[in-house]
Image (tube, rainbow, N blue to C red; front, side):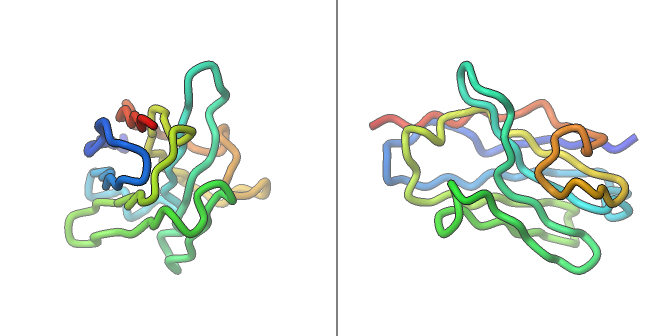
Length: 126
């Protein structure tokens, strides 16, 4: 079973930065895609960024493009989300997820992901 553990959340003022990490078991490399989602208070879970493990293609939601950067550390089976220029609307619980197989609906479909971490809280104050 794939296990994902997020870390790095916290409280920051608007305009600040945070770096989230998602540590996976060694066999996470067998997954098709790893993604970051978030769920703000009273909101649906929404996509943030995703990376295809095979070719390294990265996708970003329009709301974070240019501010967030997803990367990976292959040696540590860890995925990072560097968040800069944070806004109050970025406040949410951030989840890491792994998709085992390609899904025709695209990278942003919550139901396409097979494994989820427990989430890490990010709070941005204005």
